[in-house]
Length: 169
Image (tube, rainbow, N blue to C red):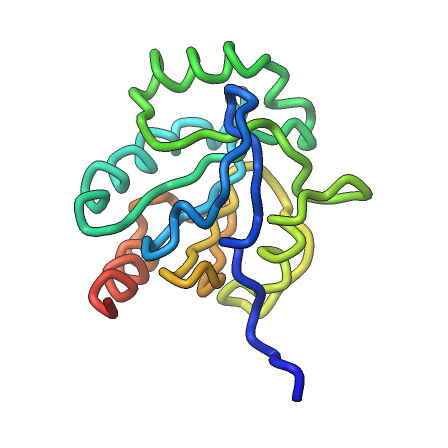
């Protein structure tokens, strides 16, 4: 009998900003907030809230993983070095940032093939609509919640969902 459980992201390997491949299995046992990020977007200030979540919960087995994407009006045009410098200087980002990838379309990353199968709280699944869409991943690497771009990182819905995952361990 085939399993209908969602695929785990832990089986994937993706390059960090440095270009060095990293297995997402490294984050096994952690709750993860995956976010497609961009430096020149109206939602870019969300980097600050993402960093605060990371600071608040990283000691309890939580991380944020940022995935730059240039598919929405070219709002992430920078090189890996420029992205890293921007995030560090402007928002003090210390959570892991990966290399640019496509979140939709013919070159969609396998990560986003998995993530976009889950509907948001209104029941809408499918392609990422804009930068800073957020996906909450459980300790087994399975997507549990999806939050659209307008939902701020420290919104009570996200905070409560993170805390529930961390308490479930």
